[in-house]
Amino acid sequence: MKRKKMWIIVVIILVITGFWVLTSKWLAEGEKPRATGTNKYVVVLGAKVKKGAVPSKSLAYRLDAALEYAKKYPEVLIIVTGGQGPDEDATEASVMKNYLVDRGIDEKRIKLEDKSTTTYENLVNAKKIIGNESKKITIVSNDYHLARAKMLAENVGLDCDVIPARTPKSVEAKSRLRERLALLKTVVLGK
Image (cartoon, rainbow, N blue to C red):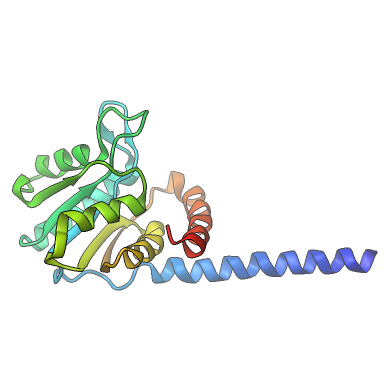
């Protein structure tokens, strides 16, 4: 019986190690290929909005990365995504649009996708906005989130490059752990 327990422990350790190695590889690959301004549409994925319609730090980092890119490539169009959660004062998309406009981006360049509640829905609805015009997009999100966003984009028929935004140190460990589990879910369920 003691030997059987030892084998069970070894198998559990091997499974956890394998899971960690595989998801680490996926997370690293998520940050490639980097955007070069060739895609017409930039999809900025939504994140938490705090009281007073203020972007969370994670969302602000995404918006700052999108802002820098939009200024470098003034011909790209921006789709901001995200509906309104029960504890949010406004839709994520509307807060994102205001943030970008307040920092000099022409509002004619910004399209709102303000119905979604998940990354999958963000991409499905962004694809509807784009229509048949293109199958290629640029995705902006926090670095840890890009691998899954790319998987989901592929699942809905989009090809993408990426702009990684940094992740706030205060939520990095928790976000990366949760994202590893979400990656596994996406691989299994496709959403």
